[in-house]
Length: 314
Image: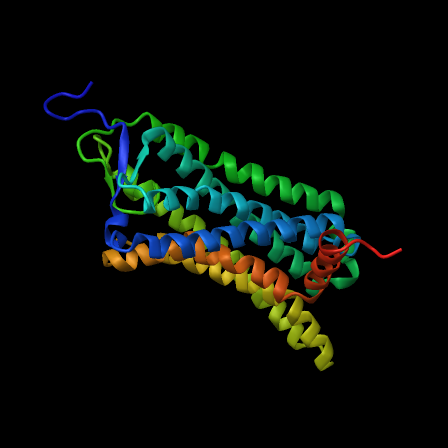
């Protein structure tokens, strides 16, 4: 029970929507289209890899798991954003806010760890091709995939449980379009010095992850440049281009969002970065891994033609 005139907060209000309140339907329908595209595109990739035996290798296995995580990563935020765009009350319950933070960041952590795994896979394939099958065994790939998901969900659990015990009173306005750790912590009716610790921990983890992946790709590029034939270099680059593009988009948006170092962005730019982080980066994943990947594109086309559009002719 809070003393004085402060009452316990049971819901939060997203003030980020106030910046786009006029003409919210103009944002609703494009965002709905993007969300549907993300879901269908990533489902296509996931099931194509599972059904097509030609794609049963470590690289495509990791891509399919990444696509599966992307479905839930976007589902953690976009449906609520869509709901708030067409509703007068831009609110979320405290429990809903905690769950959204947990699943959004846990799935994001899992994707980040999986991107490290994918960089390692490409490193072994390019830098040690003759031992690739011996190193990247199905068992090791399954362990990598499982550890990415398990560790991603466990690492944030103590933090969310700790936040759930904090008292929230008085102000209940989150200056964002979804629940995020620092904006929520700033509303707690207690010592907020922990916010600085949160910023430092997240920043260090992001920087270390970026460095690991960047160093892997630098080593990969140096090895590729030593390949004598132009055709061999082009083939090697093509197998890494998609992964590197996803890495740049994912961690580029993450860096803009969380490596601010006390820099304050204008409200409109802050909302734009949030949308890029939660919507645009996931939007390009199916495009890069399907339309820009010849093997995946051919496999998707084959399965769609044989199982959806028409039955085989006797």
